[in-house]
Length: 452
Image (cartoon, rainbow, N blue to C red):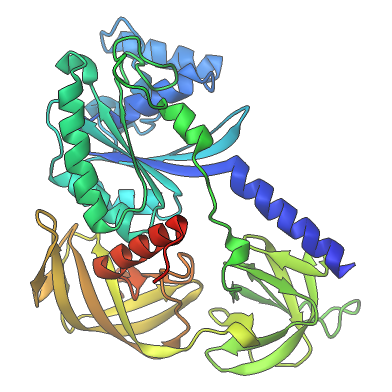
C-alpha cells in the first residue's frame, strides 16, 4: 500500500511540475508589460468574449479605435484612468501544452514591493525593456530582485521593436548589456526575445518583420521551458496553523495539527521533531479532505496526528527527525526593503516566518547593494524604499529557518512594523549576491559535468 502511494506521489509531482508554470512580468514604466500580457492572452485565445467586448468599449470611450489590450490586466479604476499598473494582476490561462499562473507586476519604482510579491513564487520572470531606452535602473533593480528570489529562468523581452525599425543591432546591444549584468547577479538562465507587444511580433506568432531572429516566440518559450522546481523533493516542513480538538462524544481524544505542507512529504509512522521545542514523536495518522491517507506532500493542506501528547501550537514546525533544521535567534539575511519608512539599526520589528511571528531587533546593517556596479556600500545605517541590503537580526525566540538557497518557502520571512502592521521588508535567510552567483556557477558546472 505504501509503495503504491509513493509511486502515485512521484507521478503526481512529475506531472504537476511539467504542466504548470508560474511566471511574472516586470520592467520599467511604460515598457509595455500589460500590453504584452493582453496580447499573450488575446492571441492565445484565452480571453472570453464579454471581456474583450468590455475592453473594446473602454478603449472607444478613451478615443482609441483599436482595443487597448493592456486593459485586460489593468483591473483597478486608478490603473485604467492613469494608464499604469499599480497592483499585481494575476491571470490564469492554458494552452494545449501547459497551464499558466501569470503575475503582471508594476513598473513604477514606488511599487517595486509588488514586483517582489509577484516574483516570490515564480519559476520564470519576463523582464521588459523599451528598445528606445535600453537597460535602465529599474531594469537592473528587477533583475536583482529576480536573482535574489532565485527565479530560475529570466526572459528579456526587448519591446517596441517596431519603433526602432526592427533593427537587429539595437536588440543585440540591449541583450548583451542585460545578459552581462544578470549573469553577474547569478541568474542561471537568460533568454532574449525581440518583440512588439502592440503589433504582436514574436509574442504568439513569429514576426515577419524580424527574419534575422531565429529563436522562439514568447509563448513558445513559456510552453517549452523546463520547470523542475518540485516541492516534494525539498526538505519536509510542516508549519502548524491550527490545533484541532473537537472534544465531542464521537471524537473525545482527537488532537490534530492542521496546516499546509510547505515542502517535502510526510508519511504515517515517520519520526518527527517539533521545533523550536525539540520534542519528538511519531506520525500516527494524516487526514486529508476528510479521509485518512498514508502519505501527503507539498502543497497539500492536511491534519497530522501524533503518538504523543505534546504542547504544540500555531507557529511550531514539524520536520522529520533525521532532517530537522537548526534553530537560532540570530538571523543573517538579504532583504528587499519595501516600505516608505526606513529600516534602521536598533529598530524593533516583528519577524514573520511561515505561521510564526516573533519580536526582533535589527542589530546591524552590514551593507547595501549599489545597483549600478553591483558593489556593496558598507554600514549604510539604514535601508530606504527599494533598497537591497544585508541585515543581522536578533529574535526574542528561536526560529527554525532554512537557508533560502535550500527552500524558498521556509527560508523566507517578512519584517513587520509592530506599531501598525506595515510590511517593512522581505527577507531571504543566509542569502547574498555572492552566494547566489556561486550557486549558479556550481549548478552550471553540474549541468556540464564538471568536477569541483
